Image (tube, rainbow, N blue to C red):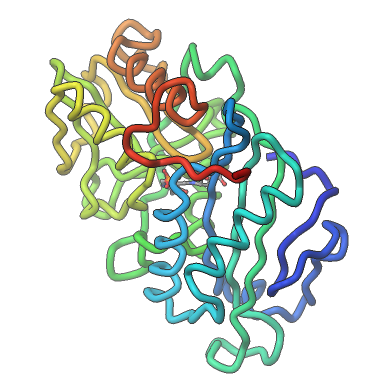
Amino acid sequence: MQLPGTGFIWFNGQFVPWADAKVHVATHALHYGTAIFEGIRAYATPKGPAIVGLKEHVDRLFQSCAICEMPIKYSNAAVTEAIVESVRKNGYESCYIRPLAYRGYAQLGVDPTNCPVDLAIATWPHGAHFGDEARAKGVKLGVSSWRRMAPDTHPARAKASANYLNSALVIGEARRHGYDDGIALDVDGFVSEGSGNNVFLVMGGMIHTPSVGSSILSGITRGYVIRLAKERGLEVREERVPREMLYTADEVFVTGTAAEVTPVASVDGRKVGTGSRGPVTTALQNEYLGIVSGKIPDRHGWLSFVRS
Ligand code: PPE
């Protein structure tokens, strides 16, 4: 994601110019990975920018912080308002929004208790994550040699920065091997998730996706897509997914705030289905993108409008 270098960042309760939102190198989170973040999007709609899943994202930020014992000093309502105000103040019609809570500057040593939990909210323009072509043609994925963290190591349900060292290794290896992204297996060898997205398979008209027991981040887009699929009468199974199902699925797609609904063209160099975007993926992608862009009525209340 390309950073703009301009605009304003909400930083511990105040808007500061992009260039001034700096931290000291002795910040606890930089040394020990003690940070939590969110990734949210606002889309341009005929009624102005709309933030997708605002409540769910703010709730997950607080849940992640609770899991990681990082109390945020602002209320849920104050953080929600700060996010809305960030989009408003920067004047973007569509953008990516990145709240970041982290253990700040006070003391170094693993025990974080005496370091403040600081909060910043940055926003920047962001288009199709894997590129415009990938929305139609799909991405190439490879199963990673790096596993997702075991459930008794890192809390995968927390969107914790420390978990993204694993993600960085997964995507780094994948890119080196010529793939767009990697798929990590869980500690038992079942499919877990991509470096920054959840994985879905379509087989015989049924949808399969790894359950929360496979060390996934419980994606908000994942929840939305499961709902859209069920509304279409499709059966959705959240259960363990053996790796080999990736090679026999009719369709595979990934979901995420950044990834939206992106078809998967191949896994480990093996073509998925016909190798082009399948009908179920196309229908769910069109519906998701239609709702977030205000072209299809928001019947689930997913959008929060920034301008009243
Ligand atoms: N798994 C992981 C590991 C993950 O990072 C994300 C989001 C998801 C699943 C999907 O979650 P959701 O966005 O709630 O549907 N990854 C964010 C960061 C990606 C990036 O920085 O690149 C995102 O999509 O914004």
